[in-house]
Image (cartoon, rainbow, N blue to C red; front, side, top):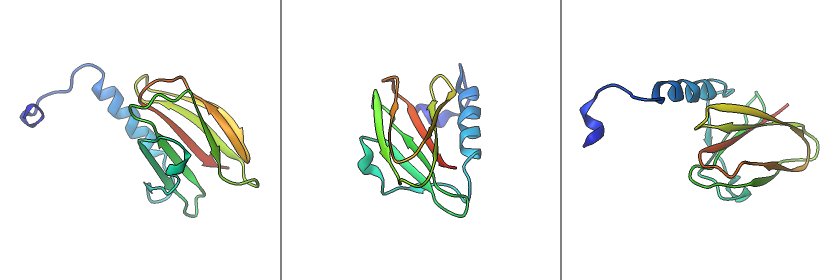
Amino acid sequence: LWWSHGGDFHGESPERIKFLSRILAEIPGYGLKPSSKSCLGQVGAVLEETGESGAFYLFYYGFNRPSFRDFYFDDSSDYEVELIDTWEMTVKRVGTFRGAFSVEMPGKEYMAVRIRRK
């Protein structure tokens, strides 16, 4: 198999791995687990941490290319929302929301939405 021969990374692979490693290092608590919130739309993965550090969600859309996503958690907490472009290696703060809200997305592959309860 092509991947079993070892060798060096080429192109932007090392930078992308560092970027994703930083994203994972910012996860609070003991790490992420699969979430039951998959009903929020077509998602490649929904991960959550709801320990003492509060609620933290990471919605990864993989090959899907949504132009927006609707969310609802509760009416009493504020949630900070960030849009992560894993291909361009950028994190964009979208805003702080409460109750039901919608996040506009660029319609690209490999996007993620990070949501943290404040």
